Each structure stands twice: as structure tokens, then as C-alpha cells.
Image (tube, rainbow, N blue to C red):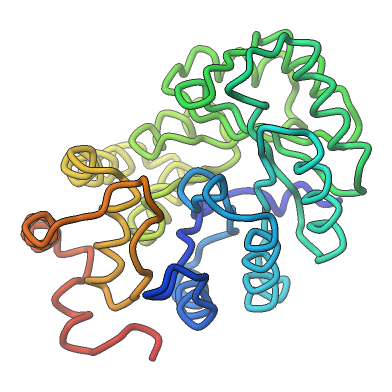
Length: 308
């Protein structure tokens, strides 16, 4: 496996829905083509942003197959298969391997309080279930699981476990993982508002939510870091964080879906119980979007539906 393919800016893809709440294949394909045209270097499916936990197993499989068919190997596709139970994860891992995904990823099992040994065994069961690389998903704020650096060092020695999606703002912890796991272990930055910090610390790339709505900004930030132009990268991080500060006043998924709608992608509403925006809130978000020309809202309205 060529680990060099896993790098750069990878959107945690929004899952487009129809008006009835089903997965929209046409909008999914248009959104994927749009993001590819902006230069993104991969896709991460059915994680927090993609609402994987609110979908059936069959829906998660269907979405992966649509994206793989549209991408056709142009960039890596990572399928998040995380669930509360190991059986679901291993079933999704086997499907992802058969479908042709480049890797799978999984949060640790959550809700029930599992000890380190149970979590370790959970990941080992996933690795043994299918011949496909695994990227651990570290997101303690949502799972409540905060594993030690030594825990990740042990897992990094397991054949088939190739990296970690590190969704925490603790850059010291990220540095420690990079240090003890070695340079062959892939570490992806998670929090978009810390993208520069993560890349500067040594992350090979970034997997993030707002890359759906402003991919060009983060692609430019990534290039600047690679070229050692930190002042330019810092200016972009400050700029996108001004928008993220506004986004955090809402549910981030609802906010991003509304921005995509304003950009010409009718991705539908998030699934309940996620926030359902009122008309007043949609008006507020539109006003916010118009303050950030790089979102392209006016241009999308003039041009009609994106990707049509």
C-alpha cells in the first residue's frame, strides 16, 4: 500500500439527502465532482459530519459505493465504519474492502465504559475482519474515550493500522503521538480551526468538515505550509476562523448544509435530532455568508445550481 497517497486536504463529506430524507445520489455526485475540481486529495465518509451514526448499515454501504463510483480512484476514499458494536464495524469493514475503499476508520466503541483492553481488542477485530488499512479516529470530546499515548504506540505496531485522525486541540498530545508512533504512522489533523497548528506539528494532512464549503482556502493553507510560507498560511487560518467563529453559534452540520445550499448544492436538512434551521436562522446564515465572499454565494445564485 502506498501511504504517500494519504495526505493533504480531505473533506469529511456531507451526506446529501432528498426532501424525503433519503440519500441523494445526483447531489452526491455533483458535490464530489465539485470538490475534486477544487483539488481536494481524498474523501472521508460517514463520520461525524457525514452523520454515519444516524444512518442504517445499508445506507452507509450505499453512500460509499456512490462516492467510489464517482471518484474512480482519482483520490483515496476512507470509509468511517465506527459504531457502538464490533459486529457492525467488521461488517462495514468487509464491505468497504470489497467495494474498493482505500482505508477504513473507526471511533472507539462509545456509550458503555470500555477499558483499554476492550477498545484494543475492538480495533484488532476490525483489522482481522478484512484486508483493508485502518485509521483510528481519536475524538474524545464526543466519545468520552481518551486513550493514552502508549495505547496508540502499541496499536501503531499492529500490521494494518496505519494512522490516526486526531480530532483534539491538544497539540502536545499530537506531537507525542507523532514522536512515539514513528514517521510511518499517519497522523491527520481533525479540528479545522487548528489546521495550521496540526500541519506545523507534523500531521501529514487534515480531515475536516468545513472543507466541504471552503476547500480552496484550506488547499492554499496546506500549500503554504508545505512551502514554508507560514505567514501566508497564518493569514488564511485567521480568515477561515472568523467564519468558524460564526459557525459555532449553530449546529455545525446544519450551518454547513445551509452554506452548501446557498452555493447551489441542495444537500437537504440534517437528520433529527440534529438542529433543524428556522427561516430566521437561514436568513442569519445568509447574512453571515455574504460577509465572506470566498464562499461564493452570490456567484452560485447568479449561475444557477452548481454542477447542473
